[in-house]
Image 1 (cartoon, rainbow, N blue to C red):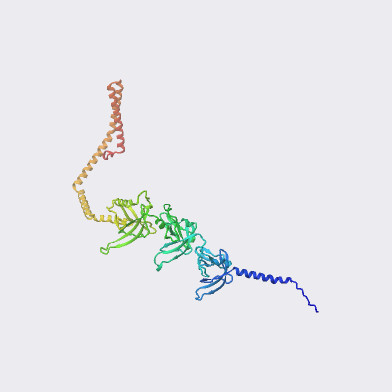
Image 2 (image 1 turned 45 degrees about the vertical axis):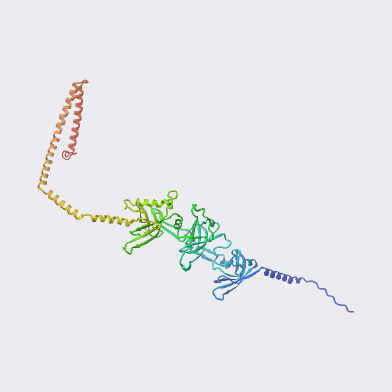
Length: 538
């Protein structure tokens, strides 16, 4: 019986190579299947910077997917980008997710996306708020959103009649610190009405907002020329290029106001001065009528008293009476007593009575020049001396202040009054009377009586001169006789000594003679220096 051959097979090491390769391929395949997420479609206006197989989708610098395909839409208006997402991003594919392309951008004074200059553009993703429905189709944003879903803060709405230079991405300032940005704006239906501006105030600055907080525009450069000279105010370079908005907390008395919610709507004022004026609660409407020029008087101008602002101008309107043809200017104003007074000094219910008293004391409204360089004018409340009697009247809810011409118009009115008074003077009659007076005076001077009087006066002057000459000639003899009398009196006084009445009387007479001699010497010296004193007097 034949024997069968028995072969022994031994395992070769070379078989390990394909086995290991197969295991690795299986592991990689399994891992690829387990980490592979859904394919989503994102539409953009352009595919600038995107490359199939290279461009990644990132969130906070973490890769969540890769672009697999780029093609035009059927209507040729958009591009459809197919992205293979990772399994970790599958739960983020909700209707709240947002996508945008990160590339270098210049927005006002800010430059973003510079890191993509070397690495290339990528698609950024914001998962959005939790919730939402699952979807694989998204509409990409053409610019980065102003607020990320994980950024703390609140969004609010501002109402303004005009935007100025405010645009998307404009900063929001709180005490010169950037506290948020402008998200966008919405025009009203039909193009009429206020514009809605959406803003985002980030934490912790949103806690300073109250329901009475005021916002104002700080775009561009604010230039003012007043009594203090030229003033230039610039919020920041970014606000100069892209516009900006600032806000301030309400006054301390308003600290009890609650914080606003996202549905709260604020008003956006044109300037900080207008925003500050809006904080005054007590407002008294005033009206005045003027018949003098009001050049430079505009809405928003100042109303002052003694140079201090006490209110603002609301409206300036020209009124013409169709029956009489009389024209006058109606100026509507708003008195804000809180600028200078508080409730403790003058209660609100006593302000109207105070105005009645002031008008009775001569308070009048007039136009004054606020700046000769810019031509700006203002309404000044001044007390006029000897003013015509007037009373404070009522026109609807407004009080009517009596008006009076002021500034150059007031000066011209005063000059006109003076010229009218001069024109009313009988100058012709005065001139005729003056001519008659001069004629009578000339006739009187040339009369015979006047010539005779002058001759007599000339003779009298000559006689006075003779008398003066004789007096000067006889004055030495008189002084010599007086000296001789004094000598005799002194001798007599020495002869009769003793303490007797005769001796005392004689001594007193000698003293008087000495004084008389001294006076005569003074008289002689004066006449010698001024001989005309006998005629003209001293």
